[in-house]
Length: 328
Image (cartoon, rainbow, N blue to C red; front, top):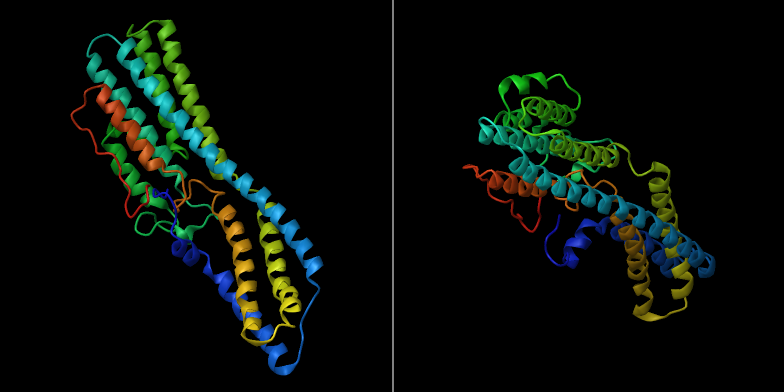
């Protein structure tokens, strides 16, 4: 996630400059054919403008839908924050019995392990994501954060080895960790660490965490429908091809240097439309590890700090801060 108030213009342009460059070359070729060889490739501007209006409406639909996916992802993690804090507070208030401090620490650490496993799973690459544009040095091209090796290393500091070994052949480790957490709560209930009502309150948070995990996995595993994404791209391309032909019709009667403004104007219009398309394209996948993602690593670390402080843990990690104005 970018943390400054605005992207700088040249950052934005550099990210999306290729459509402008291609259009500038294409438009300059049309201008040269008309100016030097008297070959006039022109179309009436009115029908092209109608096409542009249609494309703009379609891009608006795509961008709104893409933004909904990003904002939903942020709300999902907001729910995880709330349930995690409530779960930790419940453990402090409800759980009483032999070695209660150690038991609280075990449950809190397992919850942090779930946050870690979920984060790693959501950063795995999918075929429709922008793998080549992941944040340099932070995410591997195909498997983010070296999924198996680094995940095992992090989980080993949070849960017992025998429990970790039991997850090795599981397809969804985060799901299995929550299942183990639920099983452990039942064992503690049977040992009279808390009564039925408080047990159900804690289990309610487990079900809410499962619900939010499922919502996040739905966004991760189901892409923005390809027919909508592809149509937006092809319509924008068609419009970009037509724009210089229509603009040439307008500029061909102008004498002098003003005629040569035409390729720049055509490139500018093309760039604006492709920029809108690209923004929507990069908002479709809020967990893919690029610069406009939901910062789930930072959010997870914030939850971890809160929970560790609740149990007065000695090992409190530092909050993740932005690097080069980007927050993971």
